[in-house]
Image (cartoon, rainbow, N blue to C red; front, side, top):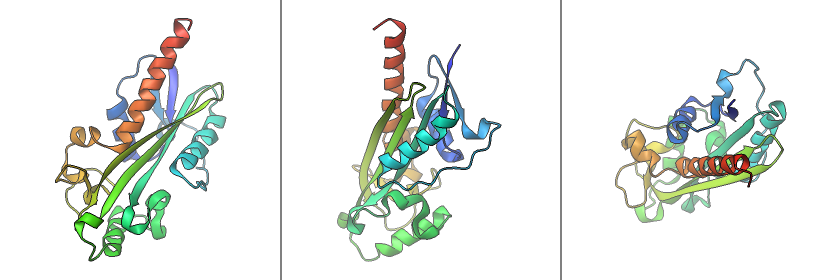
Length: 207
């Protein structure tokens, strides 16, 4: 019988990325909140870092589904010129809900700033709450610069204005596979996958 790995997200775009990146995981069946009959109000994300917010969500849902492995993530964009903003408020900056509005706000805040001073990084913290209560956190980062205008139709969030280091295209101009090979979320999720494979093998060969 397979273990259940529940990803605590209702964001369909993130769900698509997780499915692509994690793929088939031996001995685990992957599920998402949208697939569960139980509808649970999300917790308040009042942490001071991506890691803290990720753990808050992970523990919250883990206490509802104690027989599952529960994973959650928190991610965002940090811009050097803006002293790390929008950071942990990336998804809810100025109470804006639409990606286009948030992108426009960031570009306005960087108006007149030259490209070399538009350095930024995407950060992702993925937490895992195991059935016996252990919590693990995995971090991924991708450095780059902010473009002068939105470019590309792929991806979501701030992808149309983020150009990874040593690239000329934004994330939104890349294919899914190209973005996954560079993204912060992919780096963190692959660390989670590696941990689960290693831990499961240890458990079942008596180490």
